[in-house]
Image 1 (cartoon, rainbow, N blue to C red):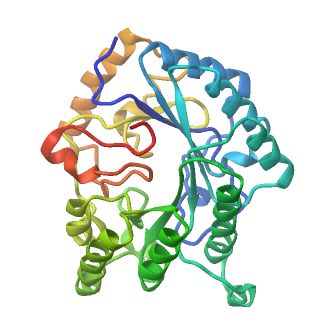
Image 2: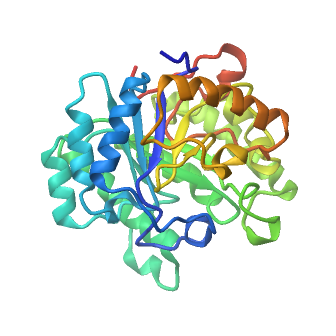
Length: 330
């Protein structure tokens, strides 16, 4: 079996979405494929991941709930005793689909919430980012009431959202919900001017102040913020420079056509060559992938990133201890 640093895979079962949030690159990403894998093909891919030792699947999009039959994938993973999943959503889920997901024992849900809005009137004149935050927070509360285990909000920090960060965390902690924060990513997807709300040097003092407050209050609030202190202390650099580069692969990831990426949506030569696909991966091909990954990194094909996946705690400790703690499978 391949000795990966950890055993997790992210799959974008579709890059279609029912929203067009301002900072999201997916609606405008030229890499979008039209040949999505079918549900049955994804099941075959999950079998292949199980064979190479993957134990955690992060179902992503786009919005996974626009993929017809997504609930069947949840049920399928749940039937595997050695495999679990995360379900990442923008929170805009049709009632019929949500009922099916709940009937299959939905858990480990990550919902995009970039601020809390209590009055629908606050949404007047706003875009999809605020709309999904309003409904996403209500979805998390609903799932909490229904007894769904392990719920988390993912908060993208940029110039527009940073003022809502502290209040959002306080409300989450009061309700027993986890929160993860990550900077808006832009470096991989185009020139800086295409992301006008990204964090810049002028934001550094405010970001450092926010992070210091978060470190202080997360102790008082029973630590419902899953980011490590080391990550928060380095948040300004990670958000502004977005130049952190890993020393080994952190996860597998697959586009909607099953083609493999190696780092949070970044392809490099590996993805562009379409050499690896979830439908044909084996232990032998993954050994070759590890060598190709090293070649891509050493060849400077990776532009760097924010070093934050949406569902882990202790992310930044990876630099020190090659052991990423994960609240979902501890």
